[in-house]
Length: 185
Image (tube, rainbow, N blue to C red):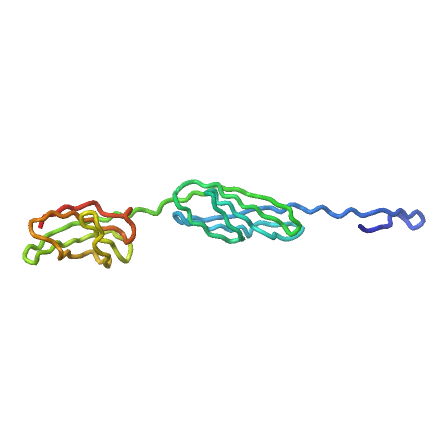
């Protein structure tokens, strides 16, 4: 509290100055999403009479974090209401919310063919459409190997006269696979 004089000196009036009230900060943010991974930027939030002291995020999926620049990986596709709460250096708070759409990554279409080499007792697999560096080879519901994604592989552990079912999947992803291909040696 300060005292001040007002008017001309012959009629001085003394009074008290009231402190300027703290102004509420303004929460604001931008975001980008690449499939299920979203990046958030709350650094555009502002405080006209001070500074932003904290940024607190609610990602709408039961999780959150702190920081002006953050990244979040959603576990599933969907529309999520994201809320940023900012506090200024005097404790005043504001929040801003926006809907964010996270989407599943595109599914690759793996095409698989199988042929036999009865002289050498082999089944030859050929595929296209896998995106990763490696693929998993499945035979009769069991993963039998992981190999380079070079489009070809031969199964030497087969028996003449037996039926087999094969599938090729992106490595560690049973969700991105070829259709089953059945063949008899």
